[in-house]
Length: 321
Image (cartoon, rainbow, N blue to C red; front, side, top):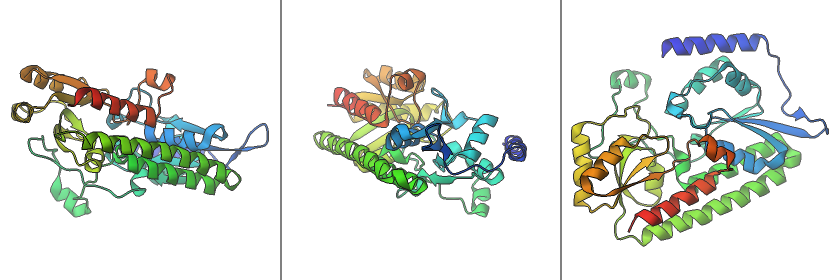
């Protein structure tokens, strides 16, 4: 980790040496201003491109199909962050590398941290879950005992607020387009809020709100929003992939005792744990898309945060009684 951080610092210094400041908005051939926006994760990318329409250039740093927790920025990524008009990032564990870049190569434009847009929830370890290993003595020295869940967009209500905040910042950067940005943002936020109500109506119709994930659980905000009881193998930002026998046994018993019909897993997972629990209990498995990132196929087919979450609702309807 120290070696990686040192390399990033040196790389940023080299990039800064050869790069001058740039204007807040680049002139196009037609003479119109175009914002350059860089986002670390798919939801921020999708929200910005929707608010901006054809008037902005939005770049997603995380390559399609890449697991964000193992991502390492390239020199081109670092330069893009340093020179963009607006940099959108989470501020959580999966993009901790951002702090190194920002401290060494301060962007010439604005930054917006998604975790600053909404009320935060602490990451939690529920019954039966594998606990993350932390150096708590070191954390206490640094005042970092509290760890907040970074997956704020998994609550559609939060997502709608983030869309509006992004549109507002874009409008501040390019006042002549502010009305267009906010109109598009409000329309998209409204669609997301309609979906939010559909989720509420669905969960209100269920006899039980208990779900089991044989995987990481980066859906704390989703669960809190709809008052769900959940059990999972790991917390949302865990780097572990193999739960203990005790954890698997606990989740297996929970599926049997609670008469759970489906064991869930997330995108880009090998879903071996979910498959094992499902096989032992005679149940089925299904994927819940957290929207953290998308596959190349999903990107090419025009997937959006809204379409992915609508897909989740349909999957829930098909797999929960």
